[in-house]
Length: 232
Image (cartoon, rainbow, N blue to C red; front, side, top):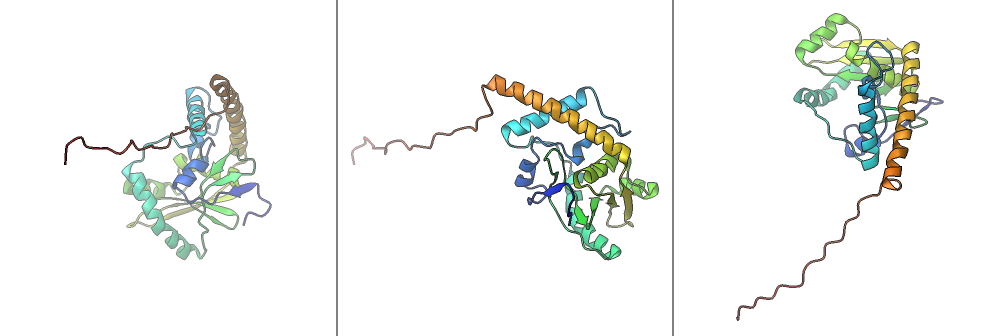
């Protein structure tokens, strides 16, 4: 899988601590809307600046910054384990589960829900009304289009399958193709991100007198044994 493609696969499973740590300081497909607008243009203004600050903090601390996760998102992650076997059965294929996929220069990452030969898979398990909206639209929803294009950017693939799954409704399965114009905008946005990131990192190191230092902890030393002064 992925022979001669410009990507590396991190072994950590999605949503584990190791996976979160591997993403620290790296822009990813699921957050691409922080750098590129829904219309496919490089963002300017406060949004990309705030995103750079968050990624700087992650890299400096060596740990992810806590973010809000709704109950719908948690349920969706659980339902993905139902959706994948259904997809495999209906499409007659086997999905390779994977973790974080990185470009070969480690400048960008994506976490597909699976890979099939040279095609990625993105599965969403939204609320019933949202799923109906996706079914009627019969295409990749706008809110997930950048994530899918980002997946293709990270892997070098030319196709990506989007699936929306709900237990009591028919699934939506749609094959999306690589959009060269958006790919170009992603490349520009990432160049700008890393230029600003590296400059800001240097400023932080100067302020710190060097790179970040891991916290040191003094080993616990128990106090001397307690002796009661009460006569026995």
